[in-house]
Every structure is written in C-alpha cells, then in structure tokens.
Image (cartoon, rainbow, N blue to C red; front, side, top):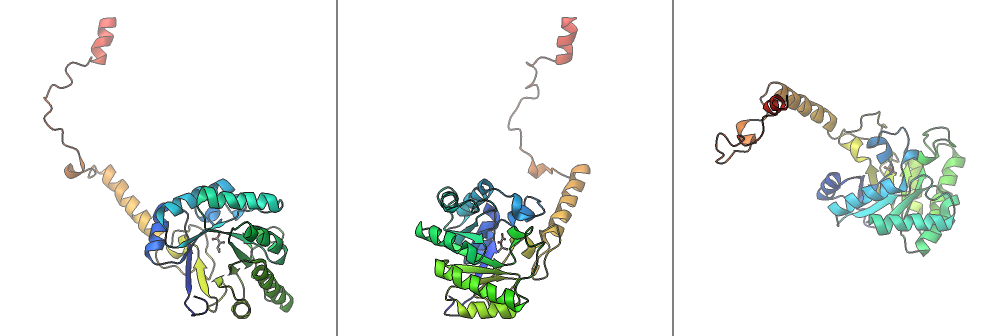
Length: 278
Ligand code: KIV
C-alpha cells in the first residue's frame, strides 16, 4: 500500500460494536490502543491501564472482525522489565487476546526489544514522537521534532526500529515536514496521528472521530459526528417518556395469553397470613 500510495486506514476500537462498525467502514488496521484508559475508563493518562484490560478488549474486537489487522498496545509497564517479560506479555496479547501484532512506544532504546519480539514471531508496530506513556519523564504531552536535534533523533529512531524488524511505525505529534522526511526514508509504512498528510496512513481515536470523547481533544482530531450529543438527547427523551408513562406502550408489552382472572387466588395473601398468625 505504501508503494502504491494507497493510504492505510487505521482507527482504534476497544469493543465489539465499535470494531464491527470500523470493519464495515473498510478500515485496514484496528488498534486496541491504551487510549482506552482515557476515552473508555476515564483515567487522566494511559498509564493506569493493565495488560489484562487490553487483552479483554482485544478479545471483544477479535470477536467482531476478521478482515482488519488487529494490533494491540503493550501497556505501560508491560515491556519495561526486560526481554523475557516483554515476550511473555506480548504472547498473552497474541494467544489470549487474538492480536495479530503488538505496538510499543519508544525509539532506538526499544530496538533490541523489538528485535526479540520479532524473533519470537510477534509482529511489532513502533510508535515514536509524542509518547503518551512518557508523560512524566517528558513533562507533558509535547510535539516532538521541532528542533533539528529532535528531528534528527526521530529519524534515527525510525531507522533503528525499521532495522529491528518493526513492520510499521506510528508517528504521533510530529511536524508534518519531519513526518514527511521520515516516511520517505523508511521502507515500512508510517501511520500518522497529528503528523501531517504525508504519512502512509492515518490513525485517530474512535471516540474523538465520532464525538464521544467527553474531555478536550487535540487539534488534529477531526470530529465527524456528535454521538455524545445524540446520546444525551435520546436519554433525555427516554427518561421523559418513563416519567410521563408514555413508555412502555401496548406494543412494547407481552400479552398474558389466556390466564384466568383469578390466577393468583391460590397464593396466600400476606396480610391475611399475618392476621391468622395473630
Ligand atoms: O492508544 C492509542 O490510541 C494510540 C494511538 C494514538 C496511536 O497509541
């Protein structure tokens, strides 16, 4: 697709219904991202999500689709304790979750890990630029690559991950010109998020795209619908219908068949039973 200039359509999904809809819309890649921590679980950062939570979400996504490539994020802490633990955790994503590939954040310093995972037959998507899991050491969520030394080290990161065997690279929060240069220097596809129009594919967070993120969204997250508004409106109407007894209507009730009028006659009347007890 990279060679043909055919954009790689990627989106996150974390559950069965959204994954089905993403598949129906023809997306090529579904990322079970750790952004689930923010948009589904309500955490302020991605650091709180566990491997078990990503595995469980991956299972739901895999039950929904078989066409798109399903990539699962390795959460914070799942690849920080050495190669053996990293491989064991990635294997859980593949074997228990059904992921076809894993994604982990970081550049050159993660290259040896990427190599070990690829050696264990686990395809790896790299992720460089703005790294949400590095929010503390980097002092916030900052665009990366605005200075020439940062841009140069991003390119080195990309080349190192490619040499280590990564099959694709997410470029997040990177100036468009830098993402463009990286995209033309690596043979593997780049998938951009806040990285301009020249990447080989684009990815956004599902909830941002459909207007279901309840917090602030980054400027690159184009919103195509206002699902939060739609849901609010429909729930207000439902609550109103319950209050006014307009719900349920006759056609929303079960009929009683041919019950005799005195079908409850043989049950004890609790008040009478009390009387008798006295
Ligand atoms: O978790 C996620 O949604 C991601 C994308 C931002 C690429 O890593």
